[in-house]
Length: 417
Image 1 (tube, one colour):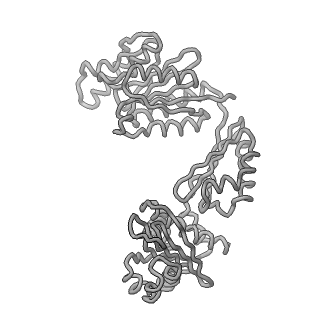
Image 2 (cartoon, rainbow, N blue to C red):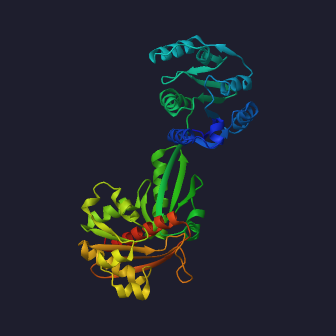
Image 3 (cartoon, rainbow, N blue to C red):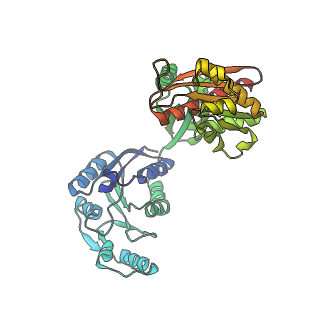
C-alpha cells in the first residue's frame, strides 16, 4: 500500500475569465478519493502553450498522476494535444482507430467529416487512446518515468464516461493505494474560533494518520476528520473513537454527521417525540419555514407559519398587543415572546418559534443597529427568548436568523429526549 498523489489541470481561458464554472475538478477529486488517490492541487491554466507546459512540469514534480481536462477540441485554441506531444518529445500521427471512432460518431449524428474533425484523430505518438463514446475528442493516456498523464475533454458528460469506464479502473489496477476515510461532524451555534479553543487538546492528541479540517459557513462549522490506512474497518473504528471523545467536549453543539441537515434532524426529533411546531416570522420573511419544508414528510410535525412582516399583521393576525409594540418596538424581547406564544396557540402546535429583527441594510438605530435580532421559543411550560447581534449583510442576516431559531428549537427538543 502506498500514498498515491494526483494533480488536476483545467485548461481554458473561459475558466480564468469567469465565463465558465469548473465543475470537472470537483467531480474528479471526489471519484479519485473513493479509490484512495489523493488530489494535492488543482490548477487552472489559460490557452497559452508556455503556461500549459509549465503546469505539466510542476504537476509532474509533485504527483504520480496528472489529470487534464479541456483543450482537446479541433480549433486553433485547443492546445492540449500538441502541448502533450511537445512535453513528451514526440510527434502527432493519424490514429486509424481514433479516426474510425470519430467517423462513426459523426455518422450517427448525421454529420459529415470535415478536415477539422479529421484532425481529432491526430494523436501523440506513444500515447494510448481512451475512446470517447459521447463526442469526437478521444482521451489520451501517456506515461514517462513512472508518471501518468491523462487528458480528457472538458465536456463533463464526455469526461465522466471516460473516467468511469476506463480511467478509474485502470488506476485502481495500477496502484495499491491506502484507503481514505472522511467523517464530518456538523456543529451549530458555536463560532469557529470558540470551537477551536474548546477542542484544542483533543485536536493536538489526534493520531498522525487522522487530519482535522474546519469548514465554516454562516451559522455552522463542519469538522472533517480524514484518516488514511491499510484497512478501512480499522480506520473507521479509529475515527469513531475520536468522534466519541469529541462529543464529550462539544456534544451540545453537534446536530449530525456527514450530509445531515439541521432542519432534517429537528424534524426527526419532533417525530420521535410526537410533537409539532409552528413559526411566526418577521425579518426572516418565511425563510425558516422554507428550511423546514424542504424535508419530505414535514407535514407530520410542521403546522405552518405566519409571516408577520408588517406590524399590522403582528397585531391583527398574530395578536401581538399594540401596547407591546408601542412600548418596546417590533424588535424586542417582549414582542418576540408574544409572537412565539401566540403562533403556538393559533396554529395549535406544541412549540412556537418566532423571529423579529433588523435585516438591513437600513432601519437600524443607535439602540438597535442593523443585525439586531430577537428569537423566541414557547412551549407548554415556558418561553425562551434570545438576542442576536448579527452583521450588516441582509441575506446572511435572514439566513442566520432562521438557523439560530431552528437551533433554539433543537436545543429545547434535546432537553425533552
